Image 1 (tube, rainbow, N blue to C red):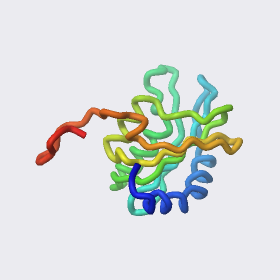
Image 2 (image 1 turned 120 degrees about the vertical axis):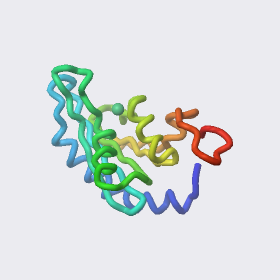
Image 3 (image 1 turned 180 degrees about the horizontal axis):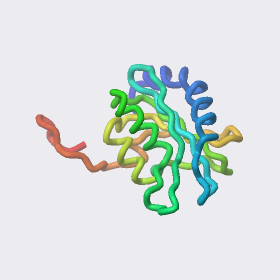
Image 4 (image 1 turned 90 degrees about the horizontal axis):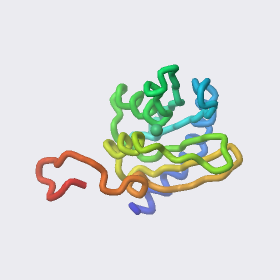
Amino acid sequence: MGNPNFQEANRKFFQELYAAAKQVREYAYAPYSHFSVGAAILSSEGEIFTGCNVENASYGLSVCAERVAVFKAVSQGCSSFRALVLVTDGETPASPCGACRQVLAEFSPELEVFMCNLKGKIVHTTVEKLLPYTFRFKKAGEEYVK
Ligand SMILES: [Zn+2]
């Protein structure tokens, strides 16, 4: 589950992350699904990057909010993350799709994930729990692929 102090540190950022995810959700381009998603991810250095889902008439080209946030961060030099907040407007908070779980695991398997809706429901988990036995290339010196 990780270091409790680490998680406590992330909780301090929660309200800021939630506000950022809720705000960026307003920019979602979702004319097909009408399901707007906002994501805010906290880098290890304490920076926040946001993303919304961007759909396309050619559905397969659509990109989820989580990946937009991660790709924005990586393209600006940040590739290590501590916490992700997702905001949707459903009865229950939505969880990251399989593709996003794999992308999140690439950078931060221990990433804390807070899935939230606009009514205040929060589901807290980690990428490791969302995607056990993640596909990874073996790194030099590793006994097995984590
Ligand atoms: Zn996704």
